[in-house]
Length: 83
Image (cartoon, rainbow, N blue to C red; front, side):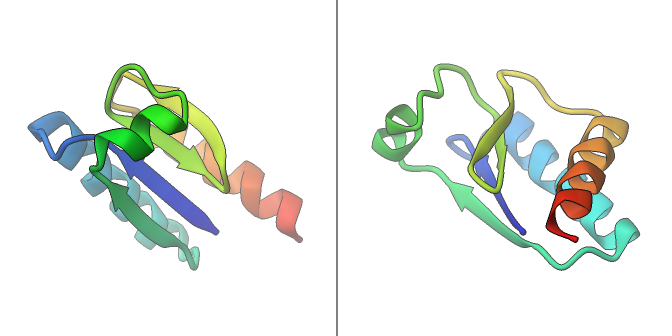
């Protein structure tokens, strides 16, 4: 599973990255967590507000810090599709 966190590295983006890493660890999911800070890459993906989270190429949230329960739901849904 590939999880991309997009943002310039602001505190909100760092908090999002920390939450995603915590949920991945708690669920025992094997995932590559990638930080994307390059504005051109962020804009090319259609992101207008950060932080943004993509799971396997699908935008899950933009402009908000997701809750742990939201992240867990996304990852469990994606894991179910992969099995």
